[in-house]
Structure formats: C-alpha cells, structure tokens
Length: 404
Length: 126
Image 1 (cartoon, each protein chain N blue to C red):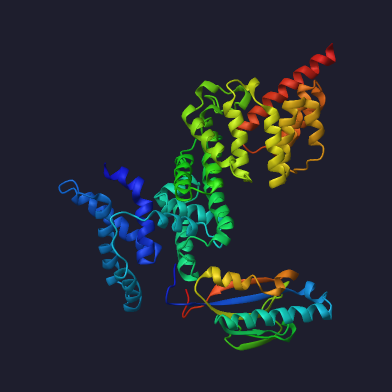
Image 2: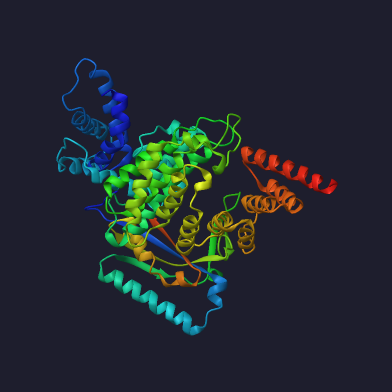
C-alpha cells in the first residue's frame, strides 16, 4: 500500500488513539504529521514490516520531542500520561468514536464541529476544508484553532457519552455528518466549483460510525440516506448544469451498487421498533430508487412514510413533501388542498410546487402567478432557469387559451 | 480532554431577564431562591462547590473607569445597561465540561428566561 493511501485510510484512526495517549489534539496532530513526514523519507529505502505500528510508535517519539520544547509543568503532565499508556500495534477503534463525539460536542458551534471532524477524523487538510466550504484558509485555520483550544481549556471530555446521554449526543454527530454530505450534495448544483468530494467523505465517516455502533439504527439510516441520494447525484443536472427533475432523470445512470447497499441498510434500520427520522427519509429515498421507471413509483408508500416522519419531526417542509406525494398518489387537486395549510415565507419551493399542480390542472393563469412568486425567492441559478422555462411554457398556454 | 487527576474550576455566571424577574410574585421569587439553595447544597454534598453568591441589582452597582486624562471616574450603575443582568455566580470543581453543564442546567432561573454562561477558570487567561 502506498503512503497516500495509508494516510487516507489510517490517519484519523491513528490520530484518535494518539489524542487519548497524549491528551491534546494539536500535539497529536503535529506528532502524527511529523511521523508521516519521516515515513516519506525513510520508507522508500527501508519499509517497516508493520507500517501502522511504525507510525504509532514514531508519532509517540515525535510527541516527546515536541514536549521537550514546552515548559516543565506542561511537559510533566503529558509525560506522565504517555508513560502510563501501553504502546499499541494498531489503533483502538473506540478512540475514533471518542474523537467523533468530542468533535461534535454540542458546546461547539456546528461549523466548528464540521471543520474539526473533517480535519481530524477525516484527515482533510485545512486548505481542502476551506476550499470545500468557500471560506478563506486563514478563517478556517482560526476556526480549527479556536475549537481545539476550547476543547482543551473548557475540558470537553475525550469519551464516548454514557448510555443516558448517548442518544442526544449521537444526534449531534449524525447532524454534523449530514451537514457535510449536504454541503457536497447541494454544491454539485450552481456554478461549477471544486469543493472537494464532501459527499464521499461524509459517506466514509458515516460508514465508520455504523461499524463502531453496530446496534444503533440511525447511523445505518443516515448511511442509507446518503448512499441513495448520492446514487443519483450525477443525473440531477444536464450538460448545461440545468436541473433535471426526479421523474425525468435517466435511471439507467443511477449507481445500482450504491442503491443496493442503501436499500440493505434501510431494511436493517427499519427493523427496529421506532425508526428515526434519517431512517424514514432513507426509506422514502429507497422507494424512489427502487422504481425503474418514474411511473412505477409507489407514491402511496411514500405518503405513508411522510406521515410517519411528520409525527416524528413535524415541520412545514415535511408537510410540503407529503403534499407532493399526495398529489402524485391521488391527483393534483388533493395535493393542492394540502398546500393550503402550509406556511413557508420566503421559501421558493412552496409557490413552485403550487404552480406545478395548477399547471397540471390546466389553471395556467394562476400557475404563472405562482411561478413569478417562486422566482422572487429562488437563489440557485439552475433552479431559476428551470422556473423561467416553466413560466414561459404556461404563459404560452395562457395566451393560447385566450386566443381560442 | 480528560482530566483524570486534575479538576477544572468552572464559573457559572447566572443571568436573569430583568423584566421577567420583576413580573414574578414574591412567592415565585421565594421558590427560586429555595431551589437555588438546594442546588448549592447538592453541589456541596458532591464536593463540586467552591464558592458562590447572589448579586444585588445593577441599580446598586458603581462602575470605575479611567477617562482620557487617566483620571478615575465613577459611574452610578453598570458598565452597560442590558436586558439580561448578572444575578449571581457559582464557582465549581468539575471533572469535565459536561459535569459543569449538568450542574448549570439545574439553576432555577433557567425556567424564567434566564441563562447560565459556563466558563473555565484559569490564571492569566488568553
């Protein structure tokens, strides 16, 4: 295995172990970077029999070198800790879990959680994270330093939360990973900018979390949701970057392997007594992914799943999606009736969906008014072009009916 | 990080919403003080309690500052008038931030629009 590959696969895991041993994130990061740098120089001529064990041991020596440059008091505290910890051949998996919970502690702002998780567990560089989130490198560097300082000074524990707190703390970890995924997912719209492969990173980290917490259903649900969405990421826009609706997407280009894995995970997660919000959303995505043609979509099942989701997590956006599903299952008039009770000021999708249902009912005049309203709130360029296209279409029909 | 042997001091800075506070009845305020006393007693029992006090209102405050000529000037009242006023503090020894947050979550003024800011205490802090 080459060094880059080893770095990608093992950096976060080794770092997690090292943090436990040396008791400080920054010190562990510096030491591990030094160890990889040393490997870069020494391995081509003298490859070690066990590369991971070599990195762990070398990083520990580097940590001691760093400590020698510190004040006596700091040195002592860290040295006592290090001497008392046995040297491992391989990183302890539970350390990765500790690191995830520490990075996603609710006392840290969500943007700090995301940055720190990608930097430590994910092994991304500060530059890569800055580019992915469209912020200047110094801003991102400062965000990371501030988060690490808070963890150290405020005494955020390096531990997996106790059972009575696990559910709540796990929610924070899942929310952080989903944020990373969505950042990558929505970035593939709009102007083409290289933003790192955040979707792949989020999937990789969530897959790790599933392995670390095999009895928790929601990490499986989230992994499934990511896989099922990612499977059709590339078919959502055409060559011009214009939006292609789900019903018009080329389903032969969907990633069947990702869908199969996602569907398997959904089934596992649904087998629990009370499926969580990620699992339900994944189950909905699974219905879409399972339909080989748009017309074969089981909309009644989707209506049912949105109903469950609405009880678990009531929100106008969920109601909006439920109304769309009802329109598909029972006809546009039924969907339109559901929209009446939904209030989402400034959100372009509410008028856009209302416009679409009115269009399908042949009420082109009212549809045009709703498209114009949607265009006032839309932010994304691809979506704006789509809405303009539809507006011109109904305006044409409006004129047509007027003449006839 | 873990603090296996060393405990961190945390300051729990307790703020109250003054308009909400003045709208409370005497009985309600009495109950808040009793509840606060209970939190202190429990923190004493677990060994977390170091110090604590309630503060009289901002109208009783006197603030000192130096003016541009480096003369000390005195102002009647707090440095800045705010809706949320510092109403008291607790100094506690806790193993982790989570333990300090757990203690902070029990401060009764939280039920009446108040807030508790938890800060680690140090020497010559950055």
